[in-house]
Amino acid sequence: MLRLLPVLALFVLVASGCDTAAPDRNGIDVTALGHDADALVGTWDLVTVTPSGECMGEDCTRTRPAEEVGQSARLVFRADGTATYTSNETVSAEGNYRVSAPEPGDSPRLTIGDARYVFGIDRDRLYIEHRYLDGPLLEFRRR
Image (cartoon, rainbow, N blue to C red; front, side, top):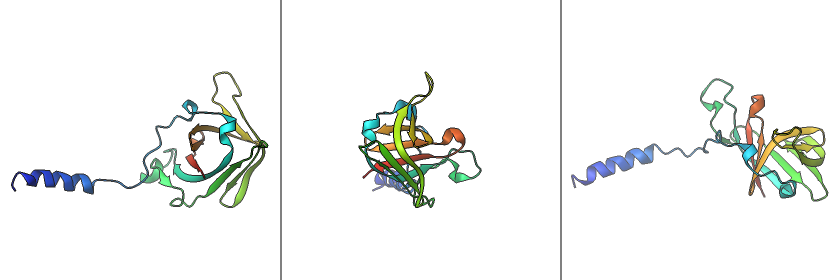
């Protein structure tokens, strides 16, 4: 029994230290992900938000579920080349979409109508990058 006490104590420490919050997404480099316009077709819902860290307090870099931060967003890409970006029940961008790299060596941009976004696709996850503007990294999942 005495031999089990250190093992049980370690188990309790590890179990109590587990964080059930969403993992930190600050290490994601959207420029290293896919940028295929054809892979965008479908409906994508916002699932997590990672702030840029350009603020004060503990929630400046921690990835949190979209509902926790009071955000909702949906991207719908259609096979006809049109898209709609709805954020908190308001259309943020709408129109034809395309993927382009504006300058050699620059990261690919997703353009929806007049709006441009730095982005990356990893299978059924789409990331919209606003951290370079002191905004968040938005993670969407395909429905």
